[in-house]
Length: 196
Image (tube, rainbow, N blue to C red):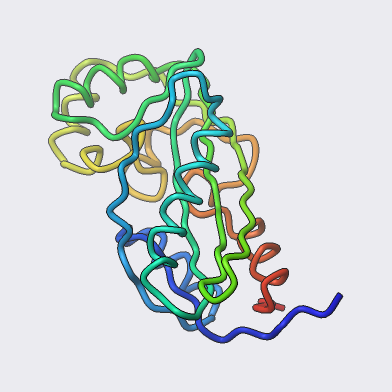
């Protein structure tokens, strides 16, 4: 099977972190936000949630185009089977960080590619275990005061000040940041956009 060569990549995300990570791969791309409903059925597993949302984002942007490969991605934090999304306010961020502190949780990131011309799609996910060090109430409040947790799944950013609260990870660092680069490059190669 020969893979048609593509040269137009569209990132279906407004996330500056995903933009930075994709830029690191050295391939040109444009950004179009998807603005999709991110509600999912409660019976879905974490893997199913990130894959469904990634695909939903990519398809929403692909539907507005006639050509190009659209990349959608989604990241969630899971503790004791409970999905922790982005905090709705500072009290919610405090609640999440209080739950996560001193414990290990899992971060799931989905990646979906959709060929806007043909509708062909592929979706996959990656997961990483993250251990947050024990935190005092004052440390949690101080971290929230930086405003960094406010638009992050699980209320922390491993690539920012949040790095100081992460004791360790088992798995792919980029999954935690929000775009697993190894997985993304494998999918891109299957769509005629090899990185190497």
